[in-house]
Length: 269
Image (cartoon, rainbow, N blue to C red):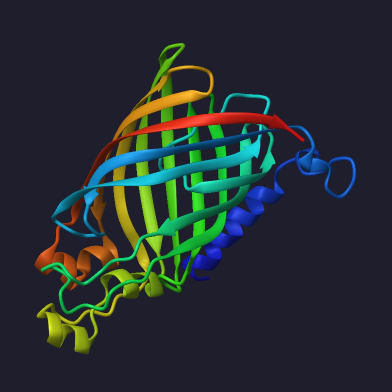
């Protein structure tokens, strides 16, 4: 069984294991009634100019999360992509997830001669649970739209501790994986590109993309307003690390630091 099919089966079986009352309600759309939340915000960060780059740039990205308010306070991370929870039992959440992908041009010295990657997105599903009161594990599996035609996914575990009622520290390991079509878009170099850029030809397969660790300090300024300072490190592995673009013009070690702010809206339906 392929990596993609295995992960799809795991996510599906995990979602189906949630008690039926988390999904059912009064009528076909009964699950929509109740208390909901919408969290919006933005992150400013210093990160590699592109995946595998050895140069860094300052950028900003939006943060959005929508779901039903559960019986317990949940943990969230700036790594969570835009998500919509269809299942929420407090200790288990599952639903839809999306990610926006910026375009990658070919106007820098490292990328000159390589085909640009179009802007696009990824859409799929997520599943998260709490094996311990102080730990959350989250997995996402997404399919590319426009930018690439492959699969990409992430698994992260975060332990968290409340230093004070308003300040929380958290951190844990991260893992990313992708299919061959994803790696072809971002790390592949065909014969024509190799001749135009001087980068060695490379045709990747699928597999593990990176292993790393991340942490954050989160401050609850008021009930709806939260700010966070975070840092991440990842080490490219597998097809990403073996790419000629990374070996000849980039760096396997990838660092990210930044700050974020969010505002939570609570409403009922």
